[in-house]
Length: 135
Image (cartoon, rainbow, N blue to C red; front, side, top):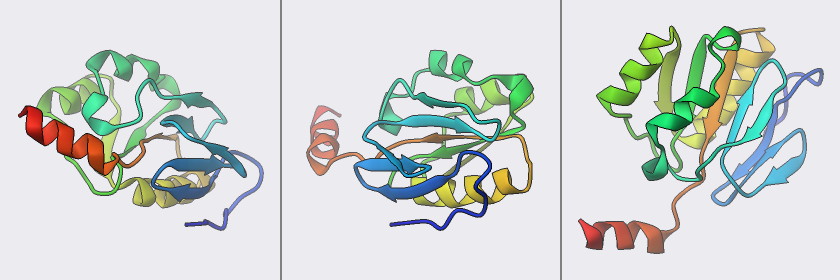
């Protein structure tokens, strides 16, 4: 899916598919942390199930009022522990599909909000099946 960016003076998500994300026209095949102040970093994992509490320390609280958590194909609610870690840092957290997080990031960043987005990829079907079999 391609997005039409609302602004051209900063970072915006320009496209998204199940296995890649595009920011300002550059494709990435891994999870990303992007913020409205112009920072773009590789996120330490690609899928929601692999997020660890230590990853949250990568988000700079002075640059961020709200984090959009793009969970992949569908919305997955974070654990209470994860939600509380954001609250303790004074940062709002909204979980949604990655496609919705991409669109919402572009809108909020264009409005000048202090927003960051953790954009994760869709888990491949084989990985989902392996997870089910282990549990």
